[in-house]
Length: 209
Image (cartoon, rainbow, N blue to C red; front, top):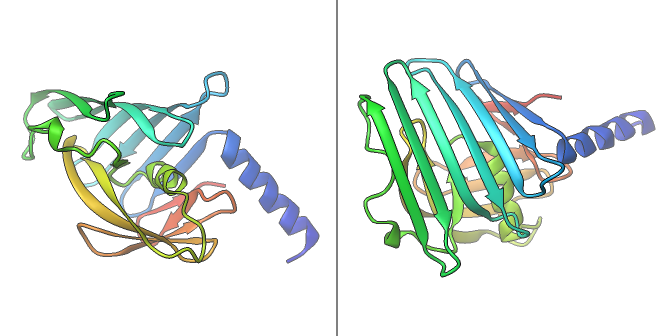
């Protein structure tokens, strides 16, 4: 690797750490934009546009603590003739609160969860198909290359329906530039940059330069 190439990659990694992030959805027509508020650390917003057989848009707002754990998430998804809203947050007592609203009709589970008490208060919060939530999960779990797999409880928000489900997933940082996740589906591998930000999933997404 030449010195110029290495310098360029470091600049790109620095921009990803502090600036906006954009991923292209390669499995369908779509993009995801993540904005981080430099004046309010821990406040992050995102917007998603997805095409395909069920096109929809999504907007979300996340509050993170000092360990990169999502403390609160508000999320809205909207498609042709339907709209769903979700508010999910952890309490200081280590439990979850969950509120959901929906209008219109889509052939899918109801938004929210029947009993928030079933959700593990220490769980990692994941948003389906969102690479930034995987990045935060790695940081929360303090994954390091060569340390072996870590199994952790997760709270997963299903997109675009906003149904909330509890489960477990195994996160394994296979070297500095690769993450492997297994859980309630097939194993999935992701590429990482020098800051541990998810940059690529074969056939599904890739980050913009």
